Length: 333
Ligand SMILES: Nc1nc2c(ncn2[C@@H]2O[C@H](COP(=O)(O)OP(=O)(O)OP(=O)(O)O)[C@@H](O)[C@H]2O)c(=O)[nH]1
Image (cartoon, rainbow, N blue to C red):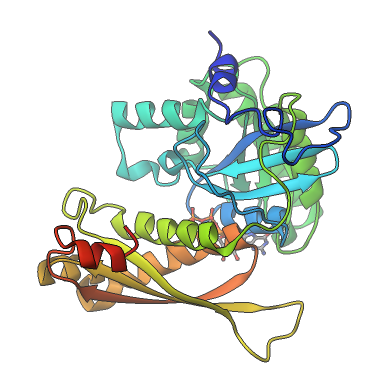
């Protein structure tokens, strides 16, 4: 069975087909599916996701059943719907080794329809990129689009050279076919962002939309925000704090006095742990870990909501909250 069929089998109920709730007319040739950006840290994945998703984010009420991974944003277009999901496995290749990485990559990337491999225009292709390319080539026939990011940082000539080097990397690692496409982009300079969506959409199967377009209620939005924070807070310390962490989003309010085209959302969040030792783990030396958690979570929340946020995190101790029904209620369980 090809990866694709497996993926199709797990799609969320062919949205709308079953109940007609939100699909009226699907134009002929409409495509919908999942894609994921991979690449070294700092390659520009989050910024590109933000640029693609813009402010048109539909927050989904349910996590998709197809993928155990977080939806970062949904690009709605008249001809297609591109659902961008996160693949933690390839973000930090050096922290995961050998078989474990292979398993993780296969699991996560086997479920998407297309992969965007981000390589910065202003940095030489290095062992990290080569490593990722090799992992991607092991996925079989999964289409991989090479996205040369930060094109605004280099001259035209240098960009041309980087495109050639990236093409050569594709031929060397990805077998005869090489990349499905190569696109230069500047997410901050608004150059070619639409083209990235175009080439990814070309790789998606013909399918009705998977998620409704438009606003949904706040509640799932808050749940997803809490989940992104929880995910960031547990990264690397999952063994130490398996279930002892609850995240409560106290408030999400637009900052007053901001220009309409550049809003800022204030997000106030409490993280509850059970013991002071756990609090220390979350916070880290001199608050260093909490700052990292905050910046990681902020990026993913901004990508999800399509707007800038100010994230205010507080770590509190709620003794034995897992065993206390009153506390559980208060913590949203
Ligand atoms: N000039 C320029 N800078 C960019 C562009 N895209 C991203 N950057 C910058 O590059 C840095 C890294 O971008 P991110 O989007 O955070 O990169 P990432 O791949 O998500 O990074 P990780 O979360 O560490 O994996 C940030 O400082 C961005 O502002 C671009 O198109 N042009």
